Length: 482
Image 1 (cartoon, rainbow, N blue to C red):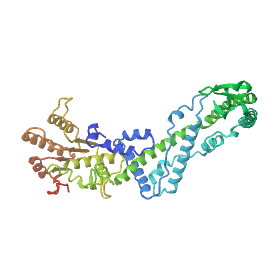
Image 2 (cartoon, rainbow, N blue to C red; image 1 turned 90 degrees about the horizontal axis):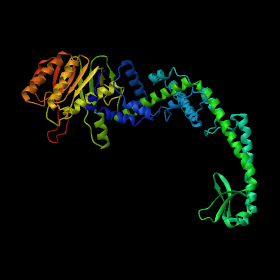
Image 3 (cartoon, rainbow, N blue to C red; image 1 turned 120 degrees about the vertical axis):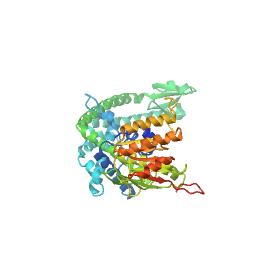
Image 4 (tube, one colour; image 1 turned 60 degrees about the vertical axis):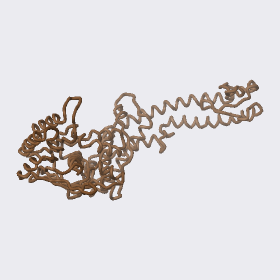
């Protein structure tokens, strides 16, 4: 499929990508949306159009597809095979969340297989490994904290820590009551996560313990009572032991989870695909997009088609958008559009081109159900004034260069969209060259839509059986396109 960056720019495909990307859950999928281009593989394209349409149907029917936030685990999954590497605790929560979401999606697709056959087929080969969640639940509680009984040694240490916490609190309270006359009004404070007595500085020698600082004014001295120093040291030693035990637990769990690395990678790829597809479906819902009829023949049949960018801009301004209808097929494959300026000729070209690119990129289009789309291997556009100061090309020189390139490439699988065909120089010369180009494109069996003011082009189209003249209709009083 040959689509130039200039063509994508001419047709404002980036504006469509930007709207779709706004619905993506992750930056990774957002980037893939901005890389979206017409598919080379036609079968894959049809599958993606169908899966997008199935999610759109679930949105429109109120039977919401069970998809929400998920996690990209690439970085940490890639490290699973490194010796003595262990996943951070929060990564296990992400693994569990992804796994459970895949479970819910597979459950949904099984229940609604009749309505989502293409999505069901995408997920049919995926196996939900319940042991992944089971292993994580054996170590973590529902708040994401490591359970006391994650290992027998950890339980012993934590039981001792709880006992020491109670003992330290008891001893501190006794000391605070004993030294009540030596304390400032605030009585106590916390420094470095340790409770300390707030002793009047001039009476600090009457309170035995560890000095931990003074207040800003120096009137208060902070002392940890002597009675809690020994249990505090034991508590700190146990906390260090707890850390080592937790690391060992995470090492063991990482090793167990590493066995399921292929499954986790498959789950993430599946969730990314769903994310990519639901973003396109939500965009389709926004623009009233549908899955049109798909034809293996060369055909573009637009019934009440809207330019999606124009439609959304007008929708946000609460303004009306005029739909368009036209058809290109084997018997009528070139349309010459003429008529006054501001009648809508250029927007017609852009609508045809953009909808065709959207369709061939797996994006649903804002048309009526009777609309029909075939496939083209090449789409060439020459829309607007592309004079290049940098390359020292005048408008006419640029357009001649474009026409020369189109002639070399055009064939029966090519769609050409050219605005103001032949303009930019002397009218007689421009008209003559445009007629030559037009007839050559016709001989190549190419499809095309050309806008022009040249009478000779219109006369030429009139004489060719597979070309037709058309014009824009507009209100003569308000100048609104009709």
